Amino acid sequence: MDTGTTAFMLCCIIGLTLMIPGLALFYGGMVSVKSSTNMMMMTFGSAALVGVLWVLFGFSMAFGTSYGGFVGSITEFAGMKDLLASQTTISGLQVSLFALFQALFAAITVALVSGAAADRMKFSAWMVFAGFWAVLVYFPVAHWVFAVNGTVTPDATGGWIANNLKAIDFAGGTAVHINAGAAALAVAIVLGKSASWGQLRRPHNVPLTLLGAGLLWAGWYAFNGGSALAAGNSAAIVMVTTFVATCAATLAWLAVEKFKDGHVTGVGAAAGAITGLVAITPACGAVTPVGAIILGVVAGAICPYAVGLKSKFGYDDSLDVVGVHLVGGVIGTLLIGFLASDSMPNKVNGLFYGGSFDQLWRQAVAAGAVLVYSFVVAYVIAIAIKKTMGIRVAPEDEESGIDAVLHRDAAYELSPA
Image (cartoon, rainbow, N blue to C red; front, top):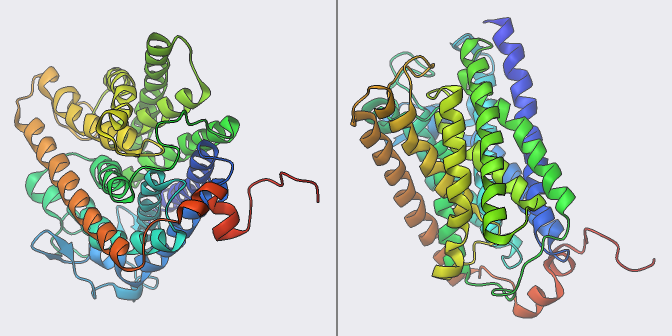
């Protein structure tokens, strides 16, 4: 084992864990004061559930020996048996630590979907959805994208996107962001519009949202840099491209806001930063710093308009998971085909660096496959929940506030004791 890599990954795991409260604050500040606790609980609840499922069989489904490139063996590492005592290493990293790093990817991805369900979904229905979606969608898709042949055991086969299609996704543009964004669209459609649809929604606490975005930005260095699985040059390059793409996207989003509305907002700054982080996630090891700036500008300029599609098409994606994560993830995944440089860790040239269309079509197939699979399965899960236990709170509960009805744990004490 490489002690330097171990120490680096331990730090990355702490950074990834801070993304859980970061996402809770980011989402919690953007919703009504009557449902802020519920929004944050959806993040913490799903993260806890996915963590348990990951140890029981999720890691095995994602990184076990493949069944046709689609999913790993459910039993091979069930309960993470023998992994804690195993001397197996992945790039000098103890395999159990790698499993924990990937567990946090799973937890954060599932929690992202909850942004489309704000103010109106039963907490019990959300937890059921989170569990089924993790098992039926995230674990298999993580296998497609992250399970390179021989990752855990030398002779084991991995997922079809990583090994057969050979699309580039350094840290989860497809498995995390397109995956979560497509599921969020399905959930929003099944849930229907909230009672406040068509009214001007105001975040109840912009500073909380900005604080959450800042924690996510900090944690994203662990998200992307840690995906290098070593404290070396690749991790350093990835952190540089992550930083500069985020800066560029923030500026681009604010410029669009100024052009469209005549002013810039705190929520816009937070959304722009997250957009840049989303878009650079698949490409952070493929593009140069200048390429990262271009990628960030493109994502930061397009995603504000993508957010507006919900008004045009009538789906209530409450916290813009579709406009930011789905669209941003697609942009970042596809732009690898144009902006990749073989001087970067992924060693591939895109069209603008003398390459052919070969990498572009591979990126497009990966993005499209994850999008369609996630949307269809998420829609089926949500419909099944709606027809059995019910998916949405009662109209009167939505009006009075989910925090008071479901949790009895309001975010703020609004009246004297």
